[in-house]
Length: 67
Image (tube, rainbow, N blue to C red; front, side, top):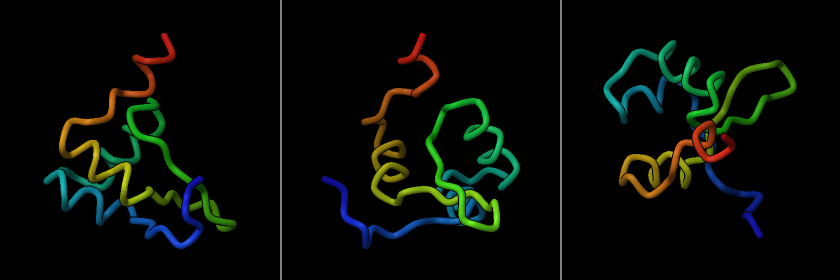
């Protein structure tokens, strides 16, 4: 079960970790490469644990897994 207190990252924070533009992170989410959560205002947020796992290469791209 996931922790409700897990830290959520903004597209800008994720972009800094991957050294890409924040719009690239948003495109990744739209393409299913990384899952995101939408805030009530419609902004994307990303689970820190998933982002860290992706950085380590531990998570398969969700769009590829679904195919």
